[in-house]
Structure formats: structure tokens, C-alpha cells
Image (spheres, rainbow, N blue to C red):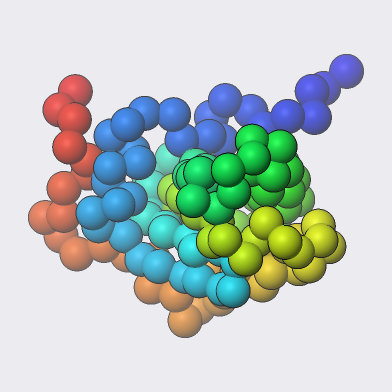
Amino acid sequence: MRAAGLPREARLRSAGDFAALRHTSGRLGGRCFSVRYRVNDLGHPRLGLAISKRVSKRAVDRNRIKRLVRESFRRARLELPPVDLMVMAREQACGLPGPELLAELQQLWKKLRSAKVELTLKPGDPTGTIVR
């Protein structure tokens, strides 16, 4: 039986990957979420989450938001271009019900898939801050 979780290769795990998204990336945003994206050469999208205590002091609220983002990403993963994504929540996300948050995430994935989003980086951009 196959596990329902995100596979290891579909997650951002290293600090260098997160740092690269903070410094050189495109941005999308909505009322509750902000997404930074960057093209990768892996052939599939990867997800990173940055849900801070500023969103909610209660861990149960932050974990609920993370679960919803992961579930939405699981559903849309095969349709997304090969990009690294870092999803950040805003304070408004804490007070909204799950279906509204999922609807906003679906709109963000749709924007990302659209041709209007520039998915190329300028030549010479650094790939991260950690040398391997």
C-alpha cells in the first residue's frame, strides 16, 4: 500500500534551498498566502513551508494550515511546472475555514501554471548560499 504523505523528493529540505527562494525568486500572493517560486532542474515541483508564530501563537492553528497546504499541493503536484515553492501564511489564514483556504491555494496554483508567470531566471543568478 502506498503512503499518502508527500514523498521525500517533493519537499524542500535544505537551508540552501530556502535561502535561494528568499533571495532570487518570483512571487505570487493572495489574501491569506504568499508564495515564492523558483525554477528547478529536477523535473518536478517541491514544496517548502514557512508558517511562523506571527500567524498564530497556537501550534494547533499553524499545524492545521500546514496540513491544508500540503493536501492542496498533493492534489495539484502533477499539474505544476518544475519549480521550488515556499508557501508562507498571513495572519488572516488562521481565522478562515479550510474550504476557503483550499480555494485560495487552488487559485495560486492556477496562477503558477498560467503562461503569465515567468518561470525562468536570469543567467548568473546564484543557486543558493551553501556551497556543496
